[in-house]
Length: 296
Image: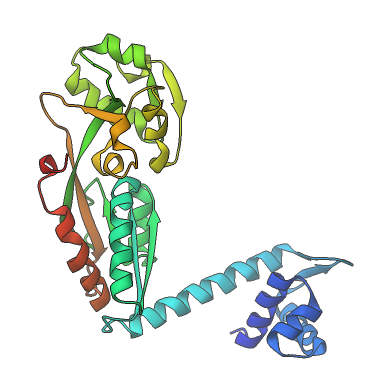
């Protein structure tokens, strides 16, 4: 077991890049800082290359820094578990796809404003990252679009979200030739989403890959920016469209049938949710329980 004080000294030294500043930060003598590093190097081998104006980590130094991060994360998880029954204080960690995240985050901030003792940690991620993060207990709550079949998880219905064909305001789309004229604004999930929706709205079409691509953007909050400027059309989930700040510059082309995805809430099944996570869910979930057909 490595001495926690030695580890704190090493982390501070890496952050400060200087023995003198590190000693001041830790309220230690410079000799004490050097001694702590020496003790670690006696156990682990050379950790630092000392240059006149900088410190460079060796491979062992990088490994120790990663270990320190793991220890810090474990300590944070321990503190969280020890305060699970506290509704008003502590961290609530939620990971979700980007579209629903755009709608969730303002609601999470409202909860935090009402309960200043809470700390909200929210990350946008694709389904596979959400699943791993919840299973590895890095996030207490997760949302995914594909329902997992894993006995370690409790899975429940959270919301429904249609995919939408969004075009510049005033544009008419009556057939595939109109899509070819407009061109496609792509994004990381664009090909898959457009393929699923357009095959329903325009059966017999040659497929989204045949359409001219007018641009690509990997930030979900910006996908509709080029659409609003008349540069093309896109296909994306409704909550992303609802979060766009200039709805007057875009419009949705309705099809004969909707393509609606279900969003599933995940958490570990082996232990109960923390009281603060239950509080957050109680506050945010009603906003997503109404029919998606009502949110135009």
